[in-house]
Image 1 (cartoon, one colour):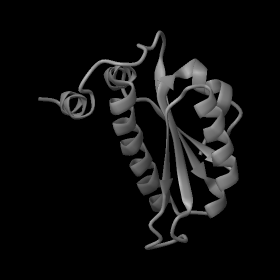
Image 2 (tube, helix red, strand yellow; image 1 turned 180 degrees about the vertical axis):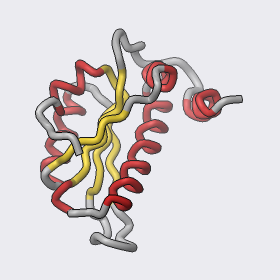
Image 3 (tube, one colour; image 1 turned 120 degrees about the vertical axis):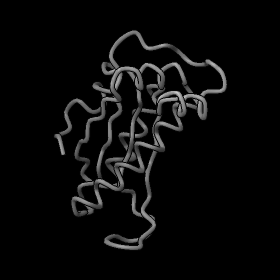
Length: 138
């Protein structure tokens, strides 16, 4: 049994939500104001990806299945600070997109509770581009 099948069985008890009509991706927006090191960013982005994948399995398994079967495209972008990430989250939620936030435990570089990464999706490319299309690549 492959990873895709395992994740699908764990997260998708029933088919609900809408099946995407185009390409899908996940967007990871990193809080650039925290000045995290590369390793810290990688770890936080990993947390966000896992959290967003599980969230999609519970709330829209058809999109998750489309994303898993199309190569799990992820794009990492820069966000200015926590307020910027929260504003982007509100826009995404208003559009009906799935979001996941990662807050750091505070064991290493940054204060406990700091918002490090906002994940949007997985969702259709065209929907998330309306919100994140002007952000710079990490």
